[in-house]
Length: 426
Ligand code: PLP
Image (cartoon, rainbow, N blue to C red; front, side, top):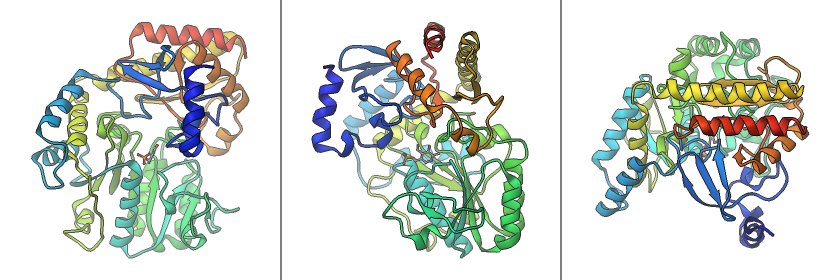
């Protein structure tokens, strides 16, 4: 038995499924999850002392690579000053100022502790601001485990939403309309019928929870137009894309401005941080300025702010995202070339430092139903093969991959060589 297998057995005695977040359990790929004890730069080291090139980066936050010395130094210094005060600090203002500078659509920003809290609070704010209850989301987009957002489509676009999980009241799910990502016509049809009842549209501007699907031209622009026509709040969930697809996030990359933005992952540099922010006029409805309640014991915690601010300063260096995008394109195209050489049909896509590959005969994948039609069994074999070769990909056919600044040319070459070997066995 490997150490990971032993540790997983023990974990399952005390933790539901042995994990604190379901995707870590490897149910999507089979086998035992790998337990890690150390991480540095581009690498993770498991409990059996095996090294892996990491393409998950703690599910996004580790854009600089693991154990970046700048973050370690900032954290050590803050630990000496105190771990938390539950009262205002200048660090929080510095962080908020930085976020407002990097994401110009944000006039005011509130820190929270996770992406889930960020989207949940943004939706509450949009409802409180508009006085409306209905919201629109898109099938295949994930916005955290918020009751109103864990909702799937009914049988037709305009039917009542259905809960994705027991425990979510049907009467709440009914307020969530789930439409097709990248299909602006379905959005226009829905708004023609009930636009003035809809508080918000929430969207991942690059869908990263159904693999990696960039917006088709006109989709985000169309959402902006529809929201303007109906007084609906446009929320970009940039928990994944923020500071990753470009310094200014997806809104910077595609030039479409939302009313509110939810942030997470990179903003915390590996510590638990989320944030939501946007137009002053809307944000002024949040307590204590306005009546929409939102709070948090650990929100703006100094250790979390230190890790986040150090990360945001580091990624603001000129050329950072260009270099990261180049690495991403090299990985993406290398995996595609490996598939071509083995005669395996594969589509690849990326946006900034996010990438995805789909075992499909389609040239490109823009829709949820195309994602669902991909060959998941082939993905599982590919994943397990790459893991044996020391390459740690997301253990699910539906998650985007992430690159980090720590990834070297040699790491990329190792990854592509591994892909050639594994593709040949599929
Ligand atoms: N929104 C998006 C786009 C996400 O990818 C995630 C998490 O993966 C979330 C929200 C939820 O963030 P968290 O897991 O920090 O609650």
